[in-house]
Image 1 (cartoon, helix red, strand yellow):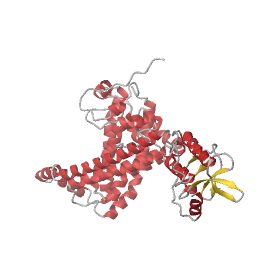
Image 2 (cartoon, helix red, strand yellow; image 1 turned 90 degrees about the vertical axis):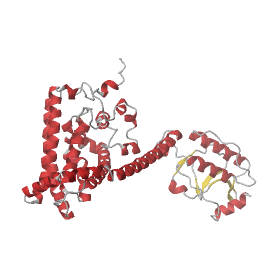
Image 3 (cartoon, rainbow, N blue to C red; image 1 turned 90 degrees about the horizontal axis):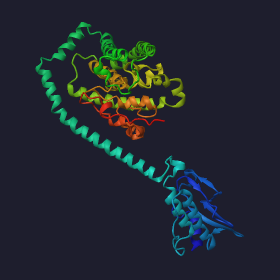
Image 4 (cartoon, helix red, strand yellow; image 1 turned 180 degrees about the horizontal axis):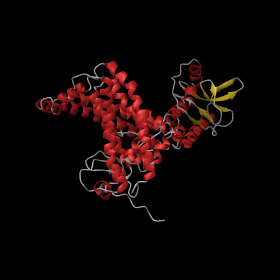
Length: 454
């Protein structure tokens, strides 16, 4: 029976098994026995890589005067003990009796065993400490996929409903107000005599910058003076920046102004020509409210993807040391620190993720103005250090500044899928990560666990 299988194997007729990478520990095989993978003898121990084993059959053979022959008898029993050693080495226990040797050679038993436990992707190759951890990660990914499908499906349904309800109502309000916004835009258009560059500079640079500095001006008063208490009582990291270091604040303001005037504004020049190529950026007719909602959704998605991966890349040790470390000088950030960064980081992580959406969509300059203003205000909120009522929660990004290797994204979706928010989800900050709908600070209603003395 063995010779028949041996002949089949030599002719390539034995069914192939795919064995993933693992360590073969064969100290239980004694005498002249040896393991063959295809035509390749395996050393003891031997690391098997997918490139070597793909489509090969694992055989236990014995050296004889006429060459290598399938092993039997004691060698077959030795192969079983070897199988048990393999399982024991992998921390998976042992197996019972091998298949009936009258119908299945030891090689089949060994190959089946190798396929069964090597395919589990042990810690040495997968990075997971246990099989349970690997399965847990797979389940987590599947849950994330289902959650994403649910969210996207629900969002599509809600969006469809909104397309026929809220935007319709808003459009009616717009219409009934005598086309107020359309009229205002036309007045502005004619004020600039239709000069596209002036309109673009006004909408994409001046208005968003004013929004940024007006919002952060209020926050900086609270940072420096500790007043009004209506703001400072909502501080996230208690005892930090209370008050803020004036020298550090001055440096942050200088850097933010430099990035705006010498990095962001020059980047608007090529963007202008891209928008001009689209041909409808400076149209006299404004986009509908429904279409603006579509654009806003796409802008947000593009920003999440580009910011997450560029931000994670910035945490590579070499780039972090020379570029991103500047931004992380503030472990307890304030609003203006949102654009306190190395110029290269400001280009690739702060500006391009926000600019890319409008350039791909060929958006109207008014849509660009609103989007840029929203982007600057929301990133200021994420860095402000205060969890203020009725505003988006800054707990997520504040935790990133505190821990450095968590919470890289904006929305948190990619962090969940990549497992870069595990520590955050186990923290009190995660419990506080919601829109505050009362006037009681979350630091009081959900306080941190007191540190043990000593």
